[in-house]
Length: 154
Image (tube, rainbow, N blue to C red):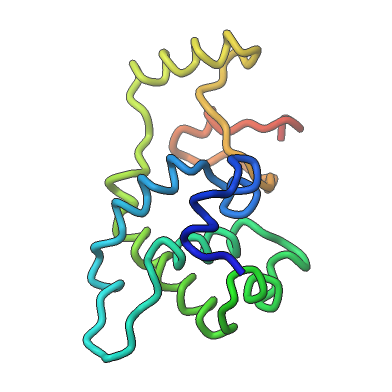
């Protein structure tokens, strides 16, 4: 069962495996979302720490197959199935409010800068990539379609 102290003391590798991000990125995200009104309540029951709720949601969203079951996540964090679902929904709602502030297409200048850095690492013509499952698209998107590429060149 993971507590806040456990999360903070996990090795970088184990933390990334559990939450699908670095300690630093996780802390930045917690700082952005922890004061959201959805983490506040007026009942006598104290709400779970926003960082734990985020860790639960990221762990669930970053898992698949048997690793994504409510039972597995529940055992990892010592929480009920309903809480897992509620935490995940709450975190998604809060993140959706932030999407226009944190998810932006890079400027042309930033694309050039990123492309140069990626080329130095052996990825010419690339401005970035995302770790995760690849879903083939039947056609490229109308906006910035030429920027969509993955290893199978579909």
